[in-house]
Length: 627
Image (cartoon, rainbow, N blue to C red; front, side, top):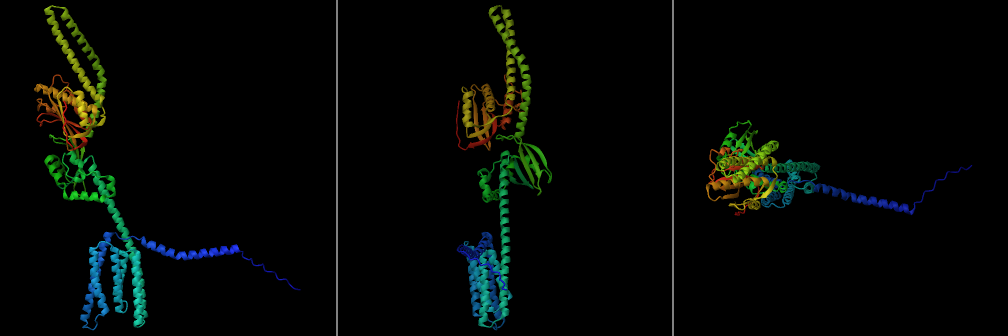
């Protein structure tokens, strides 16, 4: 029987669409293989181009060192060749190629050193050219030697290491490959010209491999050095920025800061000059308004200005003025032993141009280097707070007793007025002389009672002013505009003259400033009328340091030395018609607005001086008069 063999399944015939799909895939794979090689090369080139290089100052410094090294090396090589030739009695004279290469190397090294020192542009191009020259000269010397030796190998490695440290990685790699090509090529050329030596060829290959190893190590070290340079530069900029910020913070501090090293003043900020009324000669702090945003972006210029000022104009001027005007303060600070701290209250000397600051809290803090940090704190805020508490307590007191006093006082005043009217009516109706004389005596007594009740009522009204103004509502007041309007409203019919030498702006409660000036001008007019037939008051406005001065002057007899200590005490008066609260209220209002009210006995006229901090003022002077 015949057995039937199983039939093989027929092979599928590929369709035209599947063939096209396979051809398309093969084409894409081929294109990817063609693009892969250039993409790898491009990635390597981009990586080499992204390497970090030394900044120009460090590059110039290292370039000068390497250029000097090249010149010294070439000169030393030339001398060694001739010394060796002389010591061998002419048996081993240098070849013409070696003499020419070394002479050319010495001359070109000198030229490259001079150009690199003079020309400050294209530093890397100059270095790259010099390194290529080094490779060519060393290759010529290696060819004349006949076989690689240790000395030339070390010199090659110095060139390769220097190229990776001073140039971009791509440039350094080109120089390294150039050195490898020259070394291997000259060995092949030497072998063809003389005899083949596998040992020399192996040494050349080993030297080439060492070039690549040294180049890689040098490149990694150079990258680390560049990163360290960048970190150090960023830290230096941050320190410089913090230094500028610290200087600005110290300059803008409200408290005065003085640093004394041994017996010399090292530092004094702007607030210390202002609090002690010492002129500040610093152009950086006084005449330049430092923009904080610009300063934070470019701190080097501001720091250079500050260091220039600190180096050329030390704090000796401040120390001289401090010794001349505040010797007691300086001696108190110097008397504190090293490592000890102290706090005390220093009262500024009373001079004609006294500052708005009256007392300072001085805090002495020891520093680690045996110097002392002195902090001057203005006590005006504490005085203002104390004055506010005083006003509040007085307001509570007056509010509780005002009605209790005013009710019976009103009854007494009304009764005295009725009695006076009854006596006047009786005198007109009764013609009896004895009765009229007796009633006239009673009339004087009733009139005296009525006058005293009016005085007591004025005292109560003055005291109530303290309770009504517990918190100063400070506003910006341009005195050149505000003062003439004030004089026209309150003293239009009096001889009150205004002289303004500047146009300052102060921060003050307008109502309280009106009360102060009304009290001072009324006192001036009253006391001037006692001494002269015609009462005249002068108001003079000017600036001293950072304060605005308002002087109220009159031609009265002034204040005696005995009354000076009690001048601003409540209920103290030398006028029988006065209440003794005008100056006390005026001083309280000044303290509530961070100002001062002083009597200046050194002035030729009777002078009460109001000193307020200046907000801003113009330097243009003007003179105005109003009657």
